[in-house]
Length: 268
Ligand SMILES: Nc1ncnc2c1ncn2[C@@H]1O[C@H](COP(=O)(O)OP(=O)(O)OP(=O)(O)O)[C@@H](O)[C@H]1O
Ligand SMILES: [Mg+2]
Image 1: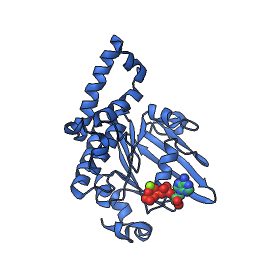
Image 2: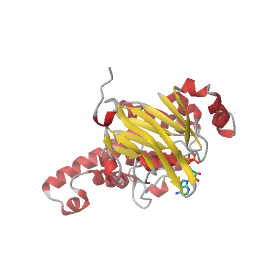
Image 3: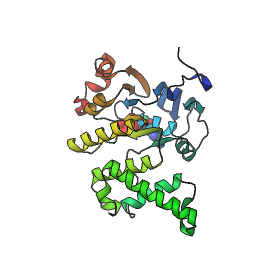
């Protein structure tokens, strides 16, 4: 029997989205979607441009207000919580266009992200009290470990703005990992990457999951989506038109009609 926790969601559910709707002016960006992401899963949200994928991320992570519906993270209703509060609870996102401190080094970018999570904060670090020096040393070690994990250890002292595009995407991931996500939401991580960078990023997402995080992925690269996902959710014009295993959604006639069967992004 499935154990049921707070708010009626099964205990193995990390994210529970119920009838989530976003109306922007007269436009229905999301028309009431519902889905669940189990702990430890990699779930992908796909669909044509303008389907509502980023809008769903924005509203789930508190960057945008829902017109209707509810979002539960680990059984907790996220209504009215700020993005910072939601991130502190363990739900962390990356952005479709990476946001970095381009004038700072790679290492400083990750360290700043760690400080935002840490107890001391930047002020404490600047005062350099003994306990804080110890914490600072631990944060430095953690920053190096994260950069090593994403493969940017050799670029730690480079100015972030000088990184190649693919490296900037890796740094975006490193910054998100610094917040210690239980649930990591990735918005088109492979966009603009070449095939070998895409393959590396895919392996990295697998390793993020192996380390215990749950992943919700928005991605147009169908080879990546279909090979990495436990479950695929398909949005079209703000509606969920299909949900199932990669094999199931790939043979769904409505999905083929709306998305997989048309345009240059159909290559599977
Ligand atoms: N802030 C906004 N103001 C006005 N319209 C918006 C806003 N954000 C999203 N939209 C509209 O909502 C719809 C969904 O957009 P969204 O960005 O969520 O799509 P998407 O699935 O992420 O597309 P893409 O694959 O191109 O990133 C689109 O019609 C878009 O124009
Ligand atoms: Mg988008």
